[in-house]
Amino acid sequence: MLSLNLPPFQPKIELREGKRFIFDILRRQYVALTPEEWVRQHFIHYLVEHKGYPQALMGNEVMLRLNGMNKRCDTVLYDRNLSAKMILEYKAPHVPVTQQVFDQIGRYNLVLRVDYLVVSNGLTHYCCKMDYERRSYTFLQGIPDYASL
Image 1: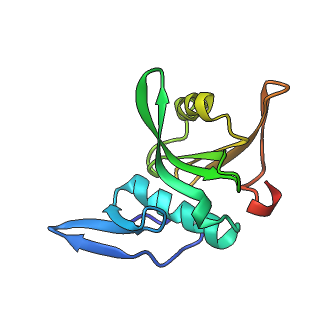
Image 2: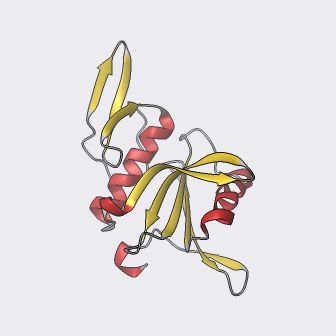
Image 3: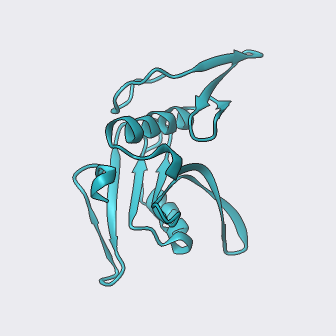
């Protein structure tokens, strides 16, 4: 798999019937190893191991209902009261982070109303903090540590 702009980690990868699977520490199971999943697993390990995010307060493939349709957020971080705090959206490394990606995560946020939105393709990462009073957002220089959220 492609080298990413994230710290390396030791993934658990299995080969089954000619297909590769990677262990997802949040779902506690092996999932198909796609380029997007490669980014997700790197990013989750980065958040847990380098930014202090509690693994127990994160969920992958979180279902939500939007305009009568079921959608799935790639990753959601919750606070200690189990309210959604951050939505993370991943794309494969060859997929550029465009306005469409921000529109997608913005639609999810219409339902969850989180404080932070993060988008990454493993090479480029964006994090913005929402300001609902001013109806605006601010792009941050990097991904904040969990303690500073």
